[in-house]
Amino acid sequence: MAKITFQIGGVHPDDSKIARNRAIEVLPLPQTVYVSMAQHLGAPAKPVVAVGDHVKVGTVLAEPGGFISAFVHSPVSGTVKKIEPRKDIAGNNVPHIEIAVEGDEWEEGIDLSDTLVREIPTDRVAVLDKIKACGVVGLGGATFPTHVKLNPAPGSKAECLLLNGAECEPYLTSDFRIMLERSSEIVVGAAIMQMVLGGCPCKICIEENKPEAIKAMSEAVAELGYKDIEVVTLKKKYPQGGEKQLIAAVMKRQVGSGALPISVGAVVQNVATALAVYEAVQKNKPLITNTLTITGDCIPEEKQHNYLFRIGMPLSYIAEQAGGVPENAAKLISGGPMMGKAIANIDAATVKGSSSILYLSEAATKRGEESFCIRCGRCAQACPMGLEPFLLRRLYAAGDLEGLEKNAVQDCIECGCCLYSCPANIPLLDNIRMAKGQVMGVIRARAAAAKVAAEAAKAAESAAK
Ligand code: SF4
Ligand code: SF4
Image (cartoon, rainbow, N blue to C red; front, side, top):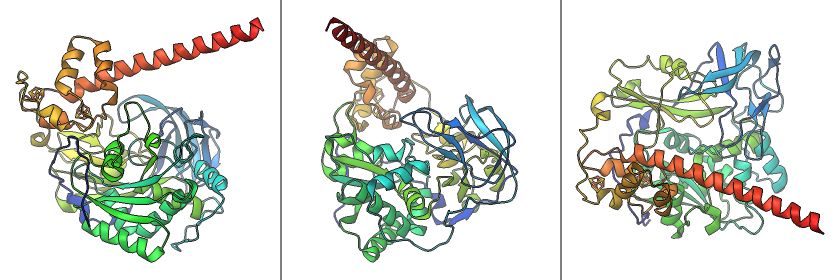
């Protein structure tokens, strides 16, 4: 099968998938879990339980706080002890519901059997409602509510569902393991999403460095026999799993600046999201579990794990289960080394989108001394969004927000390819991330002002009639 990839930029870091042979293990329950109200993109969820309430596994703890928001369910059975702010991995205070674990009693109607439910429902509205009610969000990093993404605005049509199994970030292996161990359920989840989107073709996209996953998923596709689902093999290149890069590789279409994938007929969902959709629709199971990898360059393979965790388990608890934080870990990251976020607070609770605890040694994290830009252009060659990182950095240093916007800093996907390529060790990503934040603030303020002005004009027009 021909291997495909995106054309603009990209880099080739060592994939370091050390935990790839570690089968998924189920973590034992802790004594206490802390469930965040802000574990999806959009408005935080609003608690619907009170201190002292008894909850079961799957009880609704919180309802969506807006259109872009999601339900949050209890990952354990027990008693609600506190509802108060608690620090997340970045050290920011976020409302959490603290639950003391008592037994493991599940809500009625959740099917915990291993039986594969193959028949695809045909009522798309009922399926979307079920996905929403089960709190499913995108598990590829963005945690965008899935029921919203699967329901394109009138006038938009899904022409292709891309199921993202690229897992192009070094070290991470949780998607790889679910593609090996839960392949049939993922394919059923893909077929459900296909139905919701009106029956468009589905491409399951996997990088060439995961031949076992390509085989397992291809066999599941053949065995289940749904129409128009196929596995495509991608060349190994970072960031192949980026939405726009995946669309460019597979559909040969470019998503414009500021536009969404649906503008070119694409809907991209992660393989873990497909599994969550399967569990929600076919098993009535809310999104209360996910898989994460404990990995890094400073722990041997036998101390690396792929764990099935319940959301709300503290990262420190999971680290303890794997033998504790290694003494030689200089940096702890949630996510991969290219795009992940530093863990400032190891006692933070896991959330729906948690994908790893990555321990990196000093040697792996040490940046060389920063020197002057030698105008080699490598950062621009590496940028998969066609940006000029050296220029963006100069504009940022000059505080030129207008210039930054003109040069599309808002299109940066924060992939880190520029930083990875720079021989002068210039902190391009840090600077461009800051610049992007400032420009996005300006764009949002402008949009809000335009909305207010339009409403005022409309009110004046109706008053004049
Ligand atoms: S971090 Fe942004 S500027 Fe740098 S290579 Fe990635 S998309 Fe381009
Ligand atoms: S890669 Fe570094 S040194 Fe080369 S042009 Fe970009 S910023 Fe300058």
